[in-house]
Every structure is written in structure tokens, then in C-alpha cells.
Image 1 (cartoon, rainbow, N blue to C red):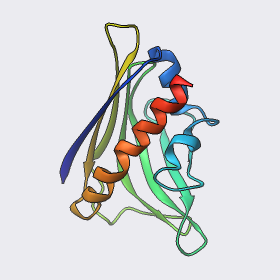
Image 2: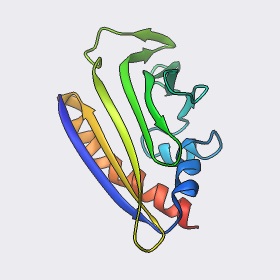
Image 3: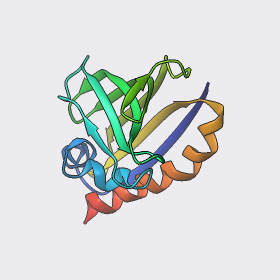
Image 4: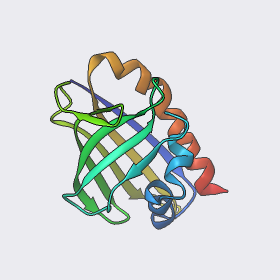
Length: 146
């Protein structure tokens, strides 16, 4: 598994960035960079299951099945990926177990936010995330600073 790191400075307070990242209204806006029509299903509580979903290539629903491993409001969100969702069915056989996706919101000296993301990925997806994650963070920055 490969660990990737991404970061951006955002001219907005941590609370605003946090709400933009995880609200049901704005989550689909910044994650559309990964997949148009993406959304998350969860109660957004630490320890809870979360499904990252969107349309798949067969016209069904695909994505990831995960668990919220750590949640500190306005500060830290860590997802533990457990498997994939294919055509609406969870599949835990693909080697995602133990892969984490972590978001850290740090206060910057100017009152803004430094958003850091650490992502574990399997090799075949590394180049995809290296290309798309900076675009997703640019979208978060654009939306938060609007």
C-alpha cells in the first residue's frame, strides 16, 4: 500500500472548511472531481459505517465501504476503508482493509485553515489520486473562499 499526502491553504476558518467537507449539501460538490454524482451515506459519528457512493460503469451504484475511525469536529476525520461497493453490493475481498484516508484541519497564522490529507492507496489507484486529489482540494478551496 502506498501513502499519499496532499495539502492546501484555505482563506476560511476551520469550522467553515469542516462543514463544507462533510455536509450532505456540499460533499457532492467537491467530490464530483472524483466522480460526478458522488455522495456519502452515514450518520457521521465516530465508529459508524460510511458508504462513499456514486454511479458505476454498469449503471448501478459503486464506491467504497468504510468506517469513521476518528472524528474530532473541525479538526480530524479519519476513514478506515474496508472494501468496495459494486453494483450496490459490498465486496471486502479487494485488499482495502487497513487503508486509511485522513483529513486534518490546522489553524493558519492568518486565521485561515491548512487542510492536510493522508491517503493509503493500492498501487493501481496511486496515479489516479495523485492527479485528482489536488483538483478536489482546489475545489474545496474555491467553494470555501467564495
